Image (tube, rainbow, N blue to C red; front, top):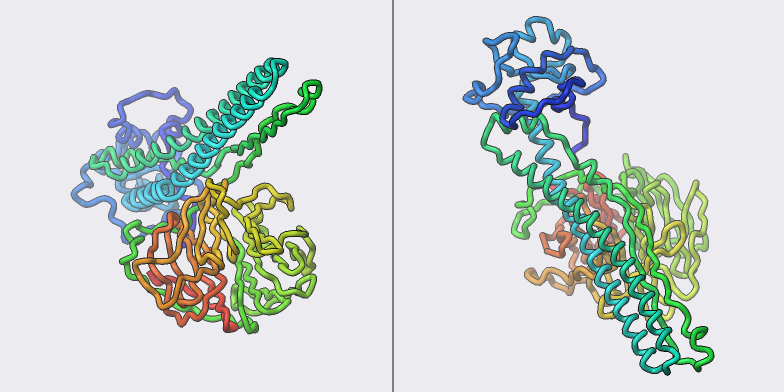
Length: 567
């Protein structure tokens, strides 16, 4: 994984102006003007900033050295060096003059290569992660818009039908209700349209930034290209801050046909539309980006077995690690949940469930706290300081799969005790904030949810034991796609999905228990390849740590295998 390090960059035009009045000049002249004015500033030392150490980089060919500006102090030399402390280009004369004595002076080629890397990395993150995320948000908002319009139309239709079944005495009431409804609809649509415009502007800004970055990267004018790199400022930090938005729920209107004297009292008032705020949050940084050309099913992929963790269970079912990768928990056919160290994978502690029942599923919150579901007891429990506390107690429903989201909420798959219904419930501070059960046609999405996971783009992924399918919906619960295995490559047995995980590129990993493989698909459901070999046997639970190491819990052994790609 690539670590994000602070990178000293050449100063912007505004910084170089040093508080002086800004001068507007043609873009083509900015490059030469900036360089010639660098040495007009003081060369104070900035020892707190790290130096750039790049080896084997050749951003400037020898044939291109003549395009570098000449140093105004030493006209016979060109700017082919860069001082890290002063953040200015320098020539051999500047260096030998002692102006940069004791400073870290690097070849200017290294700086150009590093800046190009930054632009490429930002562009890839914008193109592969941030822009698609805003596309998803816009899709959800557009869906909400359609639902709100349809709901308002439905309510107006019901109001008209009520008016047709009443005598003249209710005509005035009907008109008043229609007026109120139109005003409410106008207010709702105004809010939705305002939200749409806000996120549309953001999405356009993201796309515009992508285009601008592509223009930089494809610029054949070398002089202009260098100037653009030196003046490049990353906007990704701004785009990662997703503004607050809301969901809108239009209240139902349920009319009745009363007697004349009871008309107004019985009909009641129109329910006011409810809006549910979605707090702003920061998108996770895309830690590792690979070339899109590698994302094809035909590419060869090799995986290496790093080792095994002996769990001591007869049937190892679930494995979960924290988002920072420092916590690893495993459960199986026992009332005990085992906590292993991430250094030597030694057993640290054993946590016994509150009721003595076998846990159905486990997850680790962003704070590194263990949470588990107890199917028999109908409870969701948290482990703090070695002590188990109850979070939620269900009566008619049984909690099954569970995962922690990137906003530190809990997604829980629950099933009716009589096995007639299943749904996904989102909990925030132990309160239900969302329920996902049906698609747009009111058809149940889930029959028997086994595992649940949230992807980097906030999609919700569920594997279904009964239907033998993986169902993916958006954050708002809108159906996106289902995956029933790779139809182009036949396996010995039917696709039987169990554990789920997502990697740093929003790929979805699905354990296929009966075929001894793990399916790797992209965020849109396109099959990429199998993770097989490594002597996998009946893979169940999955999780991925911050180093993209895959942990696979094998059901009928006492092993958790650690696997990593060799690409």
